[in-house]
Length: 226
Image 1 (tube, rainbow, N blue to C red):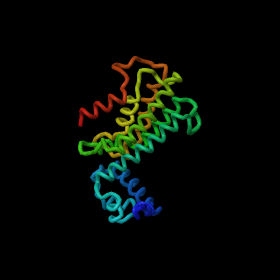
Image 2: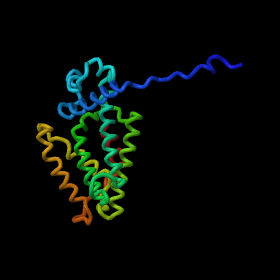
Image 3: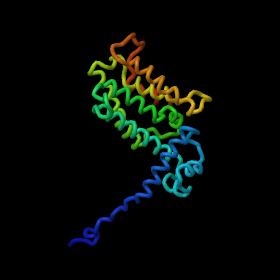
Image 4: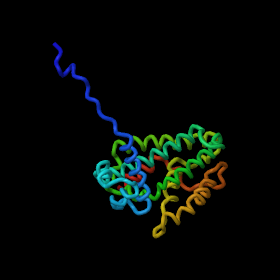
């Protein structure tokens, strides 16, 4: 005999309304901008005002500040991953068939995401091992590795550098100097990135000290510092 529970229709989970999704996207965008400008402790009221939503809407989407910080980081990682995947597959603007051009375009586009300015958010209290973050990090690392591998196979990127070298440079060169405003610092970022990229192009003009920095090196150093 079939029970009532066996024949009851499955409960449908309602999908978020389009306006609710747009509000959430506006909140994340506003938070990212303000975190870069003022740090991750910027008042919720200010984030809501810039996003054009009420405080209740912001708290309903992100009741805890840690939730909002994580969502901002995930958003940036997803955007940078997409840029790397396009470059690794030879997609994008003119010149993408040249693997080093693709690498250079990715690096400048990733810098526009202001990765370095957001690094202070990833302090000891930040849950770096959250499952969503780990999954997005693996996707990002695979995409950037593909971009680097493609350029090295073509002989366009010097062989004595690794993905870690590239990621450290993007992070460091997009982090404002102490006491400088982000807006004033931006004018130097792409200039200095181009100087760095000129040093990556093969054939190499000098011998680098040490060895290529891998993603595993970065993970190990991050764990030691936490």
